[in-house]
Length: 289
Image (cartoon, rainbow, N blue to C red; front, side, top):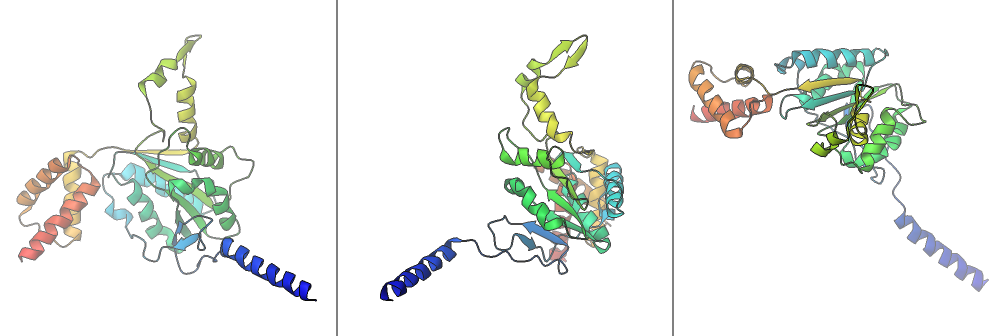
C-alpha cells in the first residue's frame, strides 16, 4: 500500500510538471465584440486577438486612387454577396494608399459582416490553423498581409502560395487574402535572373528564377498598382486633409509652398506625406492661435 501511494504521488507530481509545459487552452475569439483581429500565433493563448480600436478611414478620404478604389470595392462587394471574388495584391510606391484602402473597406462594410484579420509575414506558415478558425463562421473575412515581401527560401512564401492555389485543401468560401507590397512579385529581383531567358521558336521564355518569382504574384486574381503622385495630386490631398482637420485655407499659397517644401525634404509626394504635412501645419497654426 505504501508503495502504491508513493507511485501515485510521483505520478501526480509528474502530471503537474507536464501541465506546466503544455500550452494553455486557446481562448475563443470575441466574435461579436470586434470587427478586426490580429493573429498572434498558435502558441499564444489568444490566437485571434480582437483589435478594439481599429483605424477608421473612409473611402471618400482616399484621393487620386479612384481606379484602384473602384476595383477593390467591386471585388469586395462581390465577396460579401457570396459571388465569385479574387484575392488581391496591391503593389507599388510607398505611402500611396494601399493599406489605407483595405482599412477603409472595413469601415465601409463592417455592418455587412466584413471582418479583417491582420497576419504578419512570420505567421503565414500557420495559415491552415487560421482557416480552421474561420471555416464555420458566417462572417466574411479578409486576411490582411501588409508590406509583404519574401526571400526565396522563406517558409511563409510556400505556405501562402499553397493557400492561394495549390493545396489539396479547398480554401473557405468566406475568406480572401488582400496583401500589400512595394514589390510587384513579392520577391527580390536581380539582373542575372533575366540572363536565363531564351528564345524557343521565336518566343521568349523566362528562366526558372523568373518563373518562380512570378508564380506567387500571379496567383492573386486581382492586381492593383499604385504610383507616385504628381505635384497637383499631392496638393489636392494636402488641401483635403487641411479642410478635414479644420485648418483655415485663407492663406493657401503659403500652405502650398510649405507643403511642397515638406515633400522635398521627405523625398516623396504621396498621400502619407500629404497627411503628415496637414497634421503638422494644422497643429502649428492651432498652437499659434
